[in-house]
Length: 325
Image 1 (cartoon, rainbow, N blue to C red):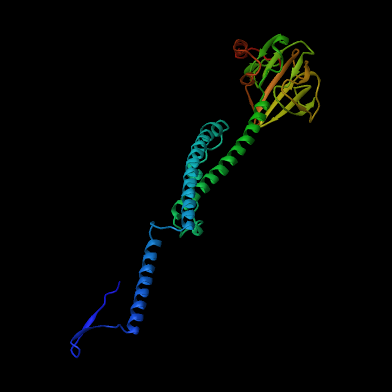
Image 2 (cartoon, rainbow, N blue to C red):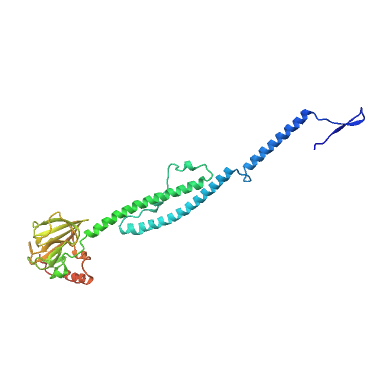
């Protein structure tokens, strides 16, 4: 209730009520409304810039932001697991697979290299959570790059494994005549007495004594390079190109079981023992060549002889006796 004001009237010697002017009343009402509106506006600005009062949309957006932050946290934990597994694979790749197949390890700086040059994440800047988003995106990009490098490495290992398998199958690894068919191991690799001139000369292979017609087997996978009688001293002979620089020679045969350019596998029957060419008695003269150089065949019997059989062969091969060719 508004206060009633009075004034003293000296003419009537009494107090008279002061009647407010209408203009002042309207002004007071206007000032009150204006003040209330200004106060309300300032209060609204204050509330909108604090967490005291949020609109339903703001509450919904806040929940979405919290959910995204949770998802990013879960993603980073999963990336930690992926990085751990990937690091384990990389370690085995460098220290087992690539080492076994004689391939150079992939340097750590190459696996962990980032992305230089142009700022790839400029579009992600300027947001409230830009640091978190950029960090996670960078991490994902590096993991993706590591996986690409590892995938290519495993592709290379697969090819090397295939080549290794072919190499192991190609290397001469068995005795060309079965032990049961042998009469004796007549002469080994090294300086021996020539059966015809009696002079001491280098015998570049091994002589296996066996009855005429005894089967002779390919000591490794390859392609028949020659099967003819056109090489001085060897008579009927076979040469097999095994690839990787390996060639084997089988001389003094009685007959062939293969022909030129024919593919053979280790253990295939290729011919039969004879005494053709410069030979004193039926036997097989066997040589192994690597990159054109003749090497001791005794180092290539790990696929067919027991330790005891190899020991006996080694004893006879080292005797400086007379060769048969």
